[in-house]
Structures are given as structure tokens and as C-alpha cells.
Length: 222
Image (cartoon, rainbow, N blue to C red; front, top):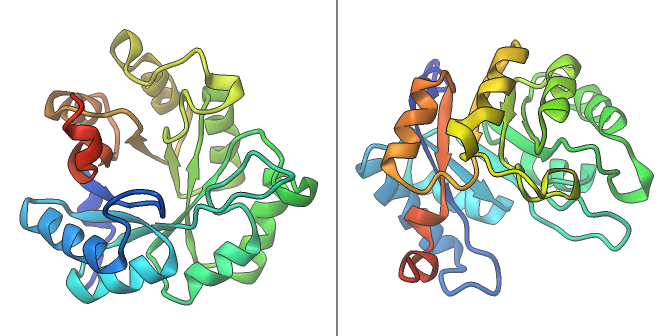
């Protein structure tokens, strides 16, 4: 499939994830969820763990943003926090790997800069997405050289707990887009078709939507 990342532009990426404590936790189910998302028009998938990604690849031929969520006692970072998770993902070769690109220290006191250069040293051609929570983090990740800048963690970190991505007509997203040079992917609390369309109108390269599509236990509470 040539130029498969180009199809992400101005389009929908669906996050197909279910954590161990959630009812749909199953690689088989995530594979079928990805297939259903493709049938509905999704052009990319965001997925957690090499097992889920491997199963998703059996069901769809869409580009994948891969992550591994894992908790460590000495860090608040849980989205692809160390080289252990990077190595796991490289076994299934997602087109893009997303990592926490916040100001928080990774396990063992590793900084984002150190981690980024370690990844690039080992896997120089791998595309990387920065999951950020503030404008400053996004600008820093852009300068480091991340291929994609995401708003994934806005509102989910101590430094961004007073923000919501949709506030003031996506003000934080608009500021990030105006200040970075690489592609911005809107993600986080985008829970209506109207919001998804709006972030694309504002200049996002693409939009990731997750819980409102793939988590029935959340949808039924609305």
C-alpha cells in the first residue's frame, strides 16, 4: 500500500482500545472493531499493545498509530514510556508510534529529549507522534523533530488540568497549529461529529476519535 500515511490527511482515525478492566478487552474484538471502523470510513487506527496491533493488521490494511500503555512506579508517564515498549511495538511495525511527550520525566528519570534520541538512534526511520498536554510541550516536541504533534493529553496532566481541548473553540489546538511546523493530529474529548469536523476545519492534519465510537460503557452513560 503506497503512500498510506497520506490518506490520513483531513480524515478520521479511530482509536480501538480496551484496557484489561474493560468489557471489550480482547485482541479479537479490537480487530473486529477496526474492521467495523474501516467499513464506516476510518482511514487509520490507533491501537494499544503489539497483540492488538497484530490482530488488527489481520483485519484491515489501514495505517496504525501504535502505543503501549504501561504503568511504572517511578513515573506518571504511561503511554509508551520506555524502550521496552518501543521494542515491543517494532515487532509488529506500526506506521507511527505515539509516545507521551509531556514535560514529565519517564521511568528512571529519563527526559523526553533523551528518550527521543534513543529511539531515533535505534530506529531512525520510524515515524513518531508526540502526545502533548500543553502548547509549550507541543512546540518543544516539534523542535525535537516529531513527525506528528498530538493534543492527546490536554487536560490529563498536572500542567494541563485546567484546560479542555474544546474550550473557546479549540483555542489550545489553534495555538499549537499556529506555532508548530509538523502535522498536528487533534485527539482527546472529541466526542461529536461536529467537533471532529471543526478541528479539521481549523487546520488539523487529521482527527483521532476513540471512546465515543469504541467504548459502549461510556456511550450508554451519555
